[in-house]
Image 1 (cartoon, rainbow, N blue to C red):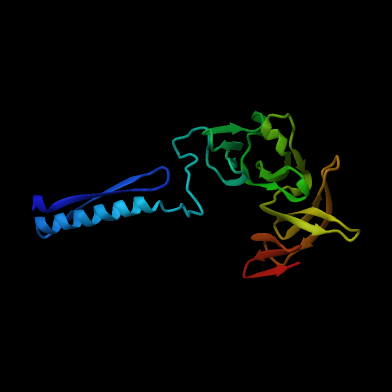
Image 2: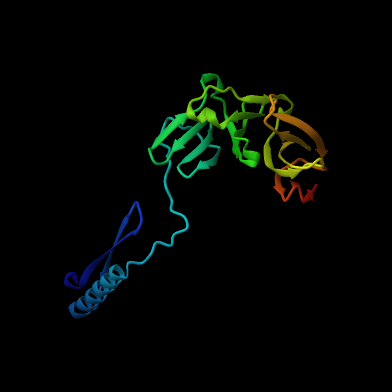
Length: 234
């Protein structure tokens, strides 16, 4: 049967271009030759067509378990086209995709577990918001800190014990829009206005819900809160 066996090799058209091989068995040598001619012709046609790349997404591995610098990534957010920010067991890290670099943010005092992280893009605030530490406080950090500027994060003390947050833009009664940060703590959702004042935030209200908050999301200036067996919109 060996003369009737041939190998077909395929490779991805985009990086990393991984190759795969398979052995095929034809009934006889003539059939094997026919298949080889057909596959060769198809390959020539494919190359001559110069097909456009229509991929919407292309996967890229950032790191794996062998990288000791990053321990137990809990969350991540997109900063821009070439950078990610990771919330890890040891604090915040920025991943430079084009340079294959991972940079820690903050000093050793800030190497606390980060459970959730996101970027506040509303009103061009330039804040990074995250849940950190054993007591799970919300903290605000200027995005300029990622460029090496020395800025300490601001902890919102009232958010102790929070387990998730969301944010969005809302219209104010006096006109204009503002950034709204909603923080879930057990059966309560705290609502804050995030601004560019010295304090950086202003508490607006507390919303009591019938059950333990499991998820929250801003939808067109309204807050959707999910709790066991039900959800509500405020």
